[in-house]
Length: 331
Length: 91
Image (cartoon, rainbow over all chains, first blue to last red; front, top):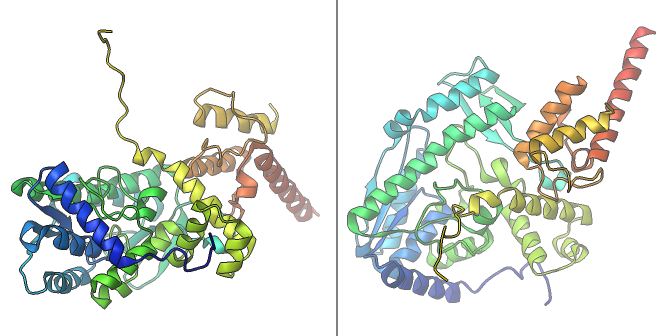
């Protein structure tokens, strides 16, 4: 197969037909549910999944659920409203907004996280913003994945330090209440109507382990899990997702400071990551990938090493609960 | 105990739960999945506390932290550099 920078591109029309049939068949026949619930954030993935689900099941069999909390971006609601208007194409899509701030407060999400942050930066309080980042760009060297904590004062002063293990684990464990609370609320609305939860992770998130087990990873069907982010954008173009959503930089919507997915996890633009990964999956040589993408061989090798490390290190997230064989069987 | 044996004992007890069969001095414990990203945080912390120097951000590279031999070489280099600085200050 000839490898070029455009080899990864799909025929969106064909793919959309395939996905729509898959959603319809699995929701109605396999899962025997009456419709679908989609958690919508104003991001590209959930927007595409909502549009596909409406096409598959019909606008009267879909509920879009917004799940804001006190640290969510204020733009989300505006973008979701634009999306609903566009996707509905004149029909009404049932939309629910559930503010989960009180739920998260009840779990101690903010308090437990902030305790860990304050152990590192004692001056940190609720007037600050914070985020976790992986600061090194993969193209600039083969630095290992080490997480850093950054706080931003009300005056805009930034402080950053490498996270010790104990604080890293506490911040992540506390923050994961967000994804798990969102998942619980989606299942509430799904069970209320005997609907299925339609998941929004893409291939990058699922295979590289950028999701919370039983959080955003919890759903009944994952219709874009096989698609690279680059291909999700193609589908978004084809479906006419509003430009403001498409041009928005993907964020995690997890920490109080704005945090792009690239800062937090991927360490390289999707544009390059996807093409290098696609080449790797199709057994294209490193030097061929490098020459087509105008990178050095070392840069491509660094990215490939990081992809392999992430897949290996996050295997636990994709595992189902491990069980034993029957204790006794009649032969 | 030799420095590299201290490192080996730490990796075996913390990441291999006492099973040493798959760990050679040149085993790439990142590629083999012995140490993950949380493990790297623990390893860096262990090196700093045990050998009493600060691991700089730019030194947390695959070339320094991916096997016992590479880690041992890195620590020797760091301790050698620190020794030179101490001697210079004394002069």
